[in-house]
Image (cartoon, rainbow, N blue to C red; front, top):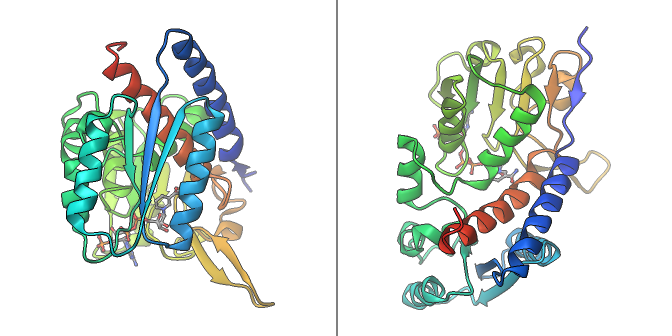
Length: 290
Ligand code: NDP
């Protein structure tokens, strides 16, 4: 029976934030203070927590944080005007509009209004396109975090078979692009995939980004595989209250997977650390520092 190693995303994220803070201190000494603007429309409780955490960690790394909280009934035109002001503001190097946006606002329109150079979420079609053709791009934070964890665990990923379950623009597709860039042989699976368990069983690297609690069972995992569980699902506990679980049946994976990220404490903390990393990258590029 395999001894499954738990990948400590929290510790890796803390290390990454430490490296970012050191680099920010160096830039500040040269007069450049990287700045991240976060825009929240409405009062979705989960989004409020994310925005608060992003703001706090931005400040902890020594960067400037600009929070814009707008009411849920904000007109699309007003949000677009704010994004344009942030595009033109030299103190702002990164812009993040927290999703989901209220239904009356066209998210794609808002995301495409962000200057691609400040698009630290990496959702603009210019950045998605640059990633797809292998040019330097601002890359979506969650898949970037997944690949950083994988490279730290496995070293070179070249030649490994990766299966990504989920094809969203924010996780599944960019995760597949990044794994391809690392010379993996990549399969993208989704809700119409035939024999999903069989596809998963071929994976040396299995990335689950589905949003269905514990869907990936232990016997879908190839013995020794590295499992990256992106899912964050809140489920009811039998004794009352709720708890977070991933898209992978974590207990069943023990003794089968070689390595696995826990939920919480795996991919989640890496997402914000990578947002800060992208803000730093964006600030340096805007200042002509490579
Ligand atoms: P989406 O809902 O946008 O996409 C889910 C994907 O899963 C779709 O491609 C869908 O396929 C596929 N899918 C759904 N049901 C099945 C099924 N039964 N079998 C196979 N594939 C299926 O979700 P996201 O990509 O935005 O997020 C995925 C998960 O990751 C969520 O739990 C989310 O909370 C979490 N997440 C975590 C983050 C973090 O920081 N750790 C950040 C972002 C997301 P199809 O396209 O065919 O419909």
